[in-house]
Image (cartoon, rainbow, N blue to C red; front, side, top):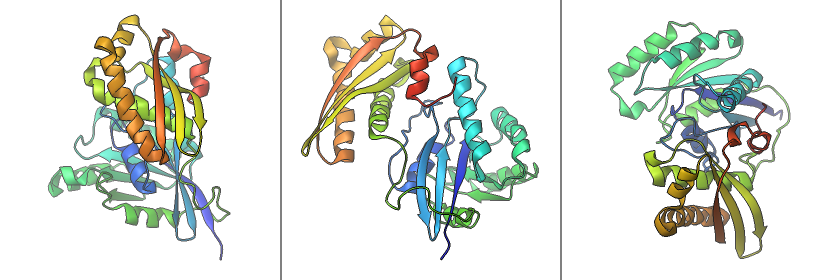
Length: 295
């Protein structure tokens, strides 16, 4: 029997639920999710096998009006993922509807009109049916979409139908990844992202968006993983906030991250966290290398 394999890019505004969707599709956490916009900073691939088809989903950074060089690189990565894909999902937050940012996205999608593009209205469980129908009608007027779908990424509603539909669109060819592989994200990278996620949740609005976590050392044995990470911030004041009074905050962040890492790795984890000030990390070439972004 022949197989098929292809790429599907998930694009949308920040906080539309792209990372929640890709985690639900692969039944495993490969992308962090936080209430902060632009949490995802680079393209993350999730691999799903549906029948004889392998679908490689690309979770892209939220597309927004970027001002700084680093942010523009994130947006560029998102559009590159869409341009290279065999199909595109425009994820729409049902609770927000047609925003100014979404209108700009709809206009920018026009050059990709030859590809199968689907509008996927997310968070259907959060709004009334009348509102969903109004949103679907407004989206259909743009004549971009092969179909308009309704899902709840958080509750996994509508995902089976979505995978089945996309599987039939993938071009014939061999699988790109082994059957048991769900992502191309390296464990060192995912571990750093998990710590960044805990940092955002525990510090809420106190912490500026400008923070970065890097896994510096990773030594693993049969029963233990020893991991050393650095949290980079842009100012000395931010460093004091992350460390907290007598080190209380950094201990909470480390403890929360360690628990999730132990669950993920299935073994004990010894996690060391250090906080350093690196004022220009957003424009540092090393940062672009770490995040696999092009300058």
